[in-house]
Image (cartoon, rainbow, N blue to C red):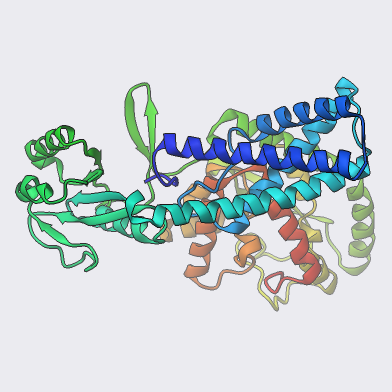
Length: 467
């Protein structure tokens, strides 16, 4: 089941209505700033700016600017999407105004206007979400649903449809060859698939039927399809893969051939990889040409005066698609024979006092910006593990190697969510792998920026897992 509430047409109408509301709010606020607050009284210039600003806003938000129609979305996610929209739109407007030499308010007043608009649109979208949820909770707007079959797919679908209760589904019950004791008591057993025509005569307002009967019942499935087509019921087939797969599946189509994918991978698209690589290259090059030489000089002086040995520590680690590379760090430990096999621990005797400071502040990781510039790593991604750990954990955790579908990073989603540092227990590594796969499926530039912000924030406030 997709992450949207009802049909694509309904979602499209809702998205367009929300964007129209955004435009009305933004233009009303601009009129207020120009005419009522007297920041600009040139009516012709004001109209021109409003038209151009509206076009830029729609261009920046038309595709992915709305999330409140998603099946499960929080107020925080709605506000973050509005923030993203205004950030991109503001940059677009500044460029357009500069290119077209449009007359507009001063930069300070424009920032004031954008902040006010951000608050206004955020409030509007949150209220809209609540109204839509209330509207769908009304019985007369519910989509009445029945299931044919009762395997784990259907049971999960029932939970998804009924939790929370504002998705607009009213599940009448399920048909199967016999009652399934694993099914929730809240879902009524309606009888066998053979009983379906007679039973549904009593429920003439059924809108959707979801079928998960095994393929060996193909004749019965065809009968169910024919019944649905003759009685204006939308038929949906649910492939039964849960007996050998427990992942969330993603439906894709090549030409007219549908197929299921285990993972949603935004970075499988070349345009997204290009965006991420450009971001990595620009940020790493800027850092290496500005702050890094100063940090390098300080670290070199202190390291050379406090502990013998090389300044840098090179360790072979597993990268993209399992390809090995040498990961660079400032050396924080005494030279030792266990460096490539033994993880650092909280009170590791191999660490020096200066090395401990570098680890707690993440300074030891900064040479990895060189790896990023070379294309071996990304700024954000799953942390690269030493080769021995890859060999060990790939035998213990089934989907461990999936984290190598994308480039490793200096920091990552797992690291800013408590899965940094030593992994004493298998469950800790499983949590880290789960976080890495979540990142792989939800990548965006904005997520990368958020993770970078969280990484810096953790350094400032202190991270107990940094050792």
